[in-house]
Amino acid sequence: MNNFRHELAGICAFNVKNDVLIKAFSALGGHSATKSIEAYSRICGTLLAADKSLGEYLKDMLIFSDSPFISLTAENPSELRIKAVESDLKIIGHIAEYSPRRLKAELSEKYGDIFGELPDYEQGSFEYTAEYFTDFAARNGSGIFAKYKAFSYCGKLCPIENTDPVRLSDLKNYEVQRNQVVENTVCFLNGKPAQNVLLYGDRGTGKSSTVKAILNEFDGLRMVELSKKDVGELPALFRLLKRVPLKFIITIDDLTFSENDDRFGILKAALEGSLSARPGNILIYATTNRRKIIKETEFEREIGGADAIDESMTLADRFGLFVTFSKPSKEVYLDIVRKLAADRGICITEEELFAAAERFALKRGGRSPRIARQFTDWLYGRIEMGMEY
Image 1: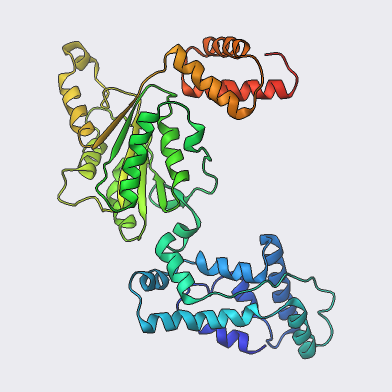
Image 2: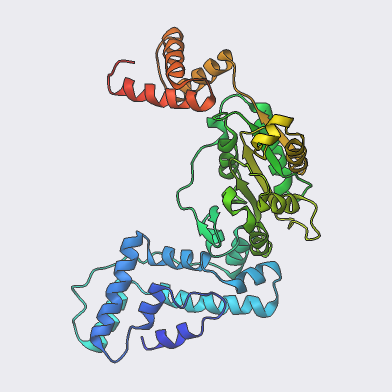
């Protein structure tokens, strides 16, 4: 029991000494019975709140720890580094050997029978090799990059815990456009030449949804959402991500710039044209609703806006792939409605479906894939609740 504190002090490969469970185990078996009771209670509370066995918790703790040593070992293994990882796993394995019954028995032997009424936890198993963790780090990174797939950036990287679950199969029609983006992403993930992508078109046609769905299709991909107001942070974001052995897509939604906006030049340089090259593990996927990315001034509109058009084109040309999403015709809109309704299991006649879809679009002022999805969600809810539609 006294060995816990000394053994855990020897952990060097995994950065886990500040984990709440590790600190609790380190506090067991000291001079104070009260502190040992508190430590045991923290162990139970932590495991029960996480709904994990001790073995599961320890595995996840190691996988998701921000451990540069593990990333270094995954990238450049050596006999000494592997032995350091194995030494840590041996220490963690000693913790995993303790069932609540055994732990309470040893504590009761030291302090007296004052632990019997305390709650139990599930022990589980812990049988992992150094290779398991280094292989995982090679595929998924470590720390937040292993735990999360999506992030936002505003001076610092913030994980997005609940991402939009949309899949490519949820998006109907526009297959040609989406296939271009998918194929480009596949090339990128496989280390082949790939392009920065500008998705242009009318509102609600599925540009942003396509980018979100790409994230959900590829396990090895990470995505960072950058607002257009923070485009000036691109160089700092590049410096942060280039050190991570994963593939990143930086997404910028609704891309527009005002005249003389410094961020315009920063984005141009980031895409192409700067002495400092964009890191090879990063692409930029941006969306825009505007034909002219730079907003015209009133004077430019009066003279035709030639300079603004030229500047917009110099930016658009730096995106190697330009994908256009046009507003759907009535026939395409109704086809999307039909497919979405089939996915939802909506069983009404096609005549009723199309008539209701047209009424819905008329109230919303237009047809688009977004309107089609909103309509099918609305219709499904009303049918389920026995309401008129």
